[in-house]
Image: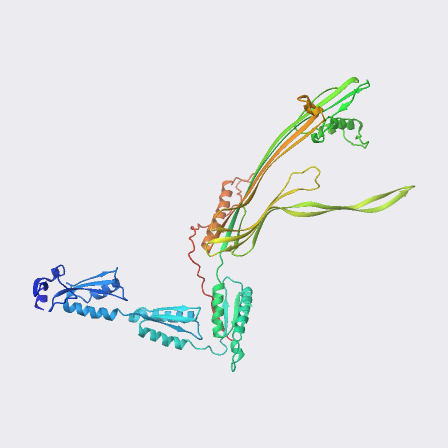
Length: 598
């Protein structure tokens, strides 16, 4: 005590020897450990291993109980405390540590009438109100909805207090208080009521009414109110808890899926034709007459001559009146491409005429369509962009009055009409997405692309080109996948000739007609699904598309002709939306309920 008053301490320096040094320097000199305690008021160093309490949390508590010259530090690796102080004070600190480093037990309380989640919320509010008043140690409490149990972890005294409170709250509901009105947030009341009715029937079948018990105590009724999207549930407490647990898990915000498709179609058509038709005639002199005519040439020298004669006489080759002049009839019969004619026509003598027809064409098409559609998880959606094209399906005429003259009769046709059926021509995208737990989407897709084809000789009505894909795929979130495609390369060669004469080298070209066409098509369909878990992500992509249309309008904004001061209508600006953050988990809010009396 005398050494402590003067700021000195005794440090062991050997067998039965002690060194008197300043107290502040004694902690840095060799001394005795706890296993070899020296007598008297000497400085010692002790290592304490903690079992239940964290060493870092205990240091600030113990430091206020030690002197200025004492040293205390924590070693987190082994959860230990290193204490260097006088012997008496070290022994006092060790007794305090022994009282604090005690195991914290837990209990599981099973409820019979009340809901575990409701009881936990009540007790938690009470604990928050008491924590600021008496500064008691923390206590942990959690609800096990599956078994309708409460887990409590804390000191024995605290667990006893919680048990007493639970016993008072876990009491049966009075008669008439088994009816609750549960308001739904996302699910449809009518659909959920059917599911709950099936569950109630199965639950009542598994638990028959025992002898001496009233069947009204086990009767459950579920009704839906479409106006408020609410459920009215009447059930005993145990079954009511199960019903509320099912509602809590089904009444959740379902994810939405934005599906963006890219349809790329490239086509190239190349065609070339070359042919010669000619005619010879000796007319009034004795000689040979000959001509060539091919069906592929369309209008040749024979057709032009016929059209000219019909225009001169006003009659066609069949003897019927044409009603057109020779000039207009001849010009309308001139084919496309190069038309080169040579000939010599005389009254008496040898006459001839030859017509060369040459044509080359090249057509290319590049079509890019990007339809997109937003729908809920496991909900069918369809988008269709196109037009309705009329197709002739029938033609009818009813006979009218009839008259006869001698052996002939005639019937006048009146009230003729045609039947037309309209078909959709354009792009159709139909999807049914299903979001999996691993951030992927299972898509059931039906994609159809139809276009009008050019008119074909001999075809009746319009012709449509249909390309359709129907499949089911799995894609990750925001992954671009290819659904399928079509690549075709077609070459068609046609040749018409006079037998034997068309095979003569060089000279045979005067007795033949040739045409070649090459058609190449490429069609690819890509798709990208995007999962939208919350309203922030939905708002981001909505504003993105909105801004794209608005920027296009502003880029092409021009003054209105003949109306100075007038402006073209444009979309108004909207607020900026931040980039969406990934949703790490969806925890729906518990369903609100109100109690009613039957």
